[in-house]
Amino acid sequence: MSNRQIIESCWNAFVTGDLGTFKKFVHPDIVVTYPQSGAR
Image (cartoon, rainbow, N blue to C red; front, side):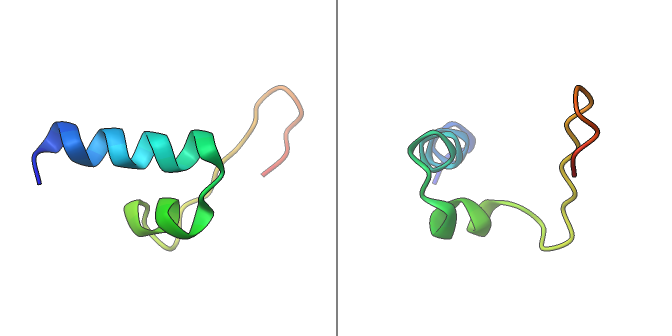
């Protein structure tokens, strides 16, 4: 799989809400912070 295919697969999983597939692309210890609200 090319880098482009990996990024496109990850993005498509994110925008469609396919969290099972999306989780395959991120590190298990990822922390996402939304600076507008301070939510994590």
